[in-house]
Image (cartoon, rainbow, N blue to C red):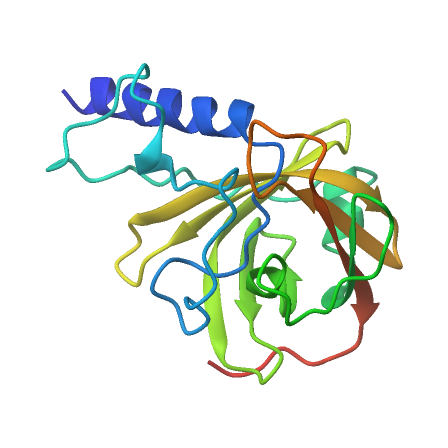
Length: 198
């Protein structure tokens, strides 16, 4: 029975990852910055389309294991520094305020560690989330699995990476998954900001 649950959970996650080329939200539903809703393209894994099989509501999602970072990979670039959200742009290239309703949910400090775990904080250093992360071998997407305090899966999200260098990490979010003409690029800059103590 446990094997079936894992396969169903990962199937639902695959549907979400495939349908959402955004989803870099740093705030979990109900987190301190939960006043900003995740983008429509960044739906929690339990909100998979009805055509996909979902685990029974009484079942607990099984968290994957952390994947340590390998040297010389895009993951190593992301893990090489801490990141600060410094700006955002819309599909026309116009600057968008970090307080804008379409981007404020993605703003904060991010720490992607070499052991495959991450921690996120608001810019006031308050805790925002933690969990597991990976970057695809081709550097095109980043996946995060946010975990609850008890280690259960809170949500899973995939972002489309626009830029990933040692100085900049930018990903794209779509307010409506079906409308690829409207999007926001969330720009992060490398920082030496020490990780806050939660």
